[in-house]
Image 1 (spheres, one colour):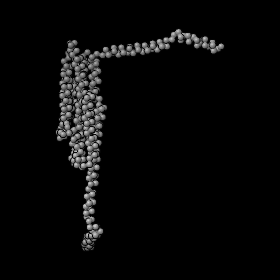
Image 2: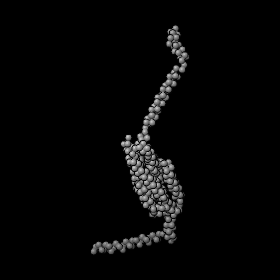
Image 3: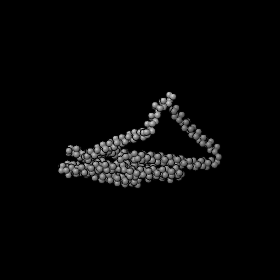
Image 4: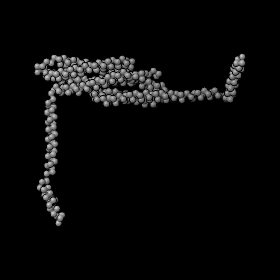
Length: 252
Length: 98
């Protein structure tokens, strides 16, 4: 009972207090006060847009920074690489540098832009027009791996031709070279397969562009498959070369 | 008097000998150089003989051993390349929200 009585008193009294407070406010305000409040709100709007622009600019700068960092790491890796041809190395570095230059000029545009919507489109362009993680980095790394495999092919081809001329010499001397010839044939087949797989990997990775972003995942998978096959072929080729050398050691 | 004696006994003969055989020290240097050149030439000839001694079979075995190491290192680098391509976080290119 006591509780109910207290509640009954509290509710109306609080309503009265609120009404009294509002009345006192309206009495204090001049007649055109409402117009002033509206103006204040209207003036507060532009700073909000400025803040949004500032934040978006910051975000854009960060996105560019992360991407240029990973691209520069790629360039360093390529510059240190010993087992690829100069031509392949130069092409791959040039690809990464083109992307860095594009992103940096985009960053300049982002910093200079004052229109929110245009700025937004520039930031979106970092993703859509470049696709650094989806396309550029996997493409570059895939082509780098293909260039490395090409180097191995070249080395094994040299060994193979030397072994072939040795086997021919022994055959001319009247020795039985059938076993060695079989190894050499397998070695040559493995090298030819590796070559074709590397070419396939190169053409697959080269076909990747930011516009084909939806296919990027499956293209990378297919390129990796070709690289793996070429790697297996080259491992087998090296095994065959070893077998020929063992045969050579045993023949005299 | 004493100085003159020392000059006559010790220094004068040396000077006379020096005047008579002026190229002596030079000749010693030249002979040293000649000796060195001869030794080098001999070494080169030895190496050439060794190279000549290497048969095409030895050369092929040597080549393969050198290439074998390079091949296995490069193939393992390619394996790393493949693993790193597979690890790339392509989600970072997700533009949803723009």
